Length: 117
Ligand SMILES: [Zn+2]
Image 1 (cartoon, rainbow, N blue to C red):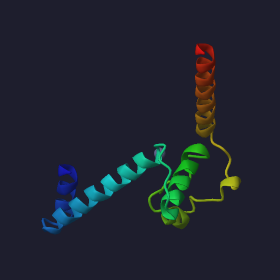
Image 2 (image 1 turned 30 degrees about the horizontal axis):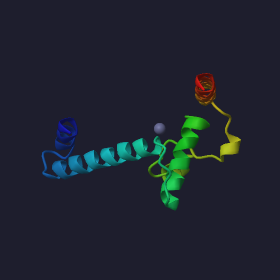
Image 3 (image 1 turned 135 degrees about the vertical axis):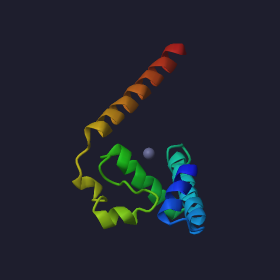
Image 4 (image 1 turned 60 degrees about the vertical axis):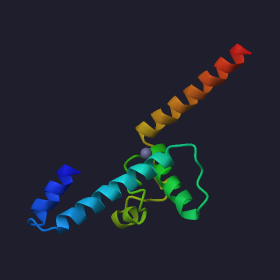
């Protein structure tokens, strides 16, 4: 927060608005990190907005990491053309590796549980 306060202090020419801007920037960072954390847990949201945010971000990780970048405010992706129809985007190599790792882990887990019973 000290770095952002310093940057805003310089940017606002020493005005006390720098404190407000820095606190707002910090709060947005917390909101971003909290939302990102929740999206990656097993928690399934109930509200339509939260479901849309979760789906938007999961496309980023499971389809192609070059798209669906602004998951807290998906409209930003619409502005920049980074929210195409999912079917029109090829699955990235990174997404394929993630899918393979997920399947391998599931196979290992089911094999381990079958072997232990
Ligand atoms: Zn993520």
